[in-house]
Image 1 (cartoon, one colour):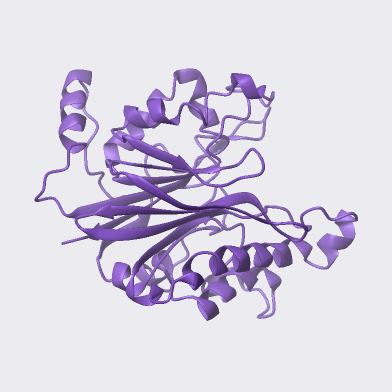
Image 2 (spheres, one colour):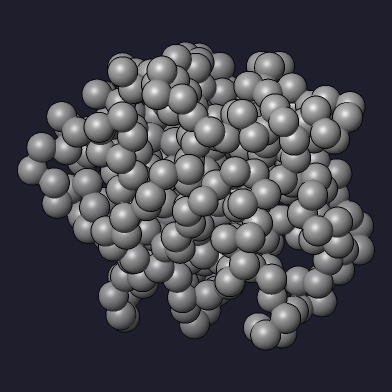
Length: 322
């Protein structure tokens, strides 16, 4: 297990001092830490605790930028009973929650349903595009976002996404027939095409710029087929084949751990990814899926089928941005 940047202390007063120092980045500190996590239904597992366990966990790692999938309160804490919109703590109170772990800024990606992505940061965030797709067949179901954050004089383009999760296509009239023809995989490909064409593929010099794309892709990569052992024409590879063939993105975890399978879920699936372009990849100091005392081996709640603390694992990347 990798050691966090700030170790948890026993005394709350000492922890507060350590966090306060860590959250005020000095001019000499040119390391940029990015954390991504699909933390399940607006961190459902910690709602009843006022998100204090969650905030303390984030403080341990002291990220500079966070990308959160499923960033809205949907269910009442410890239940699968829907929250009425007016009772939902998130997304409206992300500013207060982010402040608990030292982030001053936050923005939301475009979304059509209950599953938006939110980006929080120690530095100002520019919204470039809140992406929801186009009717009737290019809908980006959970939305996406394109943001910019400047750090140490360098502009970082950040794309967030969370694609359609089902085996059948979005709005399929006959779900079983759609499953049979791998409609979900084909629909996710449409989403990815739309997101890329409206972000990195629009940039004339993207391969020479700092681009990062992170999210829950709900699809598998061909580079992991040494583990899956599926046929080469399996449609579950479509999304990442498109990224490889049409963008300058590099799959960070695959490149850092060649030949190793790194699951990002409570099961055995790598469906969460952080991609970046070569100029940013060359600045990586460290990158890993976070398997620590809190995140590893998520426990499924039998009553709700949700997990503690999430059914996904976080990904953390450090960049040297001198």
